[in-house]
Image (cartoon, rainbow, N blue to C red; front, side):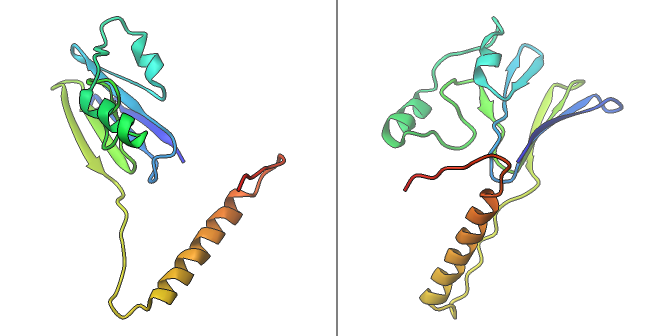
Length: 143
């Protein structure tokens, strides 16, 4: 899990990238001719020139689903780098581009039996939970 910013001095380009599943957040906004980024919205809100107006679509989604979708936030001009996405900002041209370095691949064949699919997912979930239980400190879990 990661959120990373890489500066290319030769090309004067900033790369923002986020882990494949979007565990670590990474927000960005444009202010005048600059790009501000942070792992928290409140850090961007400190900038007095940042537009903090409400995104009504995201607000409606949040009220209905307790979440907002795509790369939007509750603020109209503050965006979220998507899972497995790279945001590229060229400081010379002020051009902002987006690309994905990873996207999920859903595999399914018609020959698969429902039981086989269920057992396969159950095994993957158990493996994932067991990996996340490895820790140097005590862990707890609620049903």
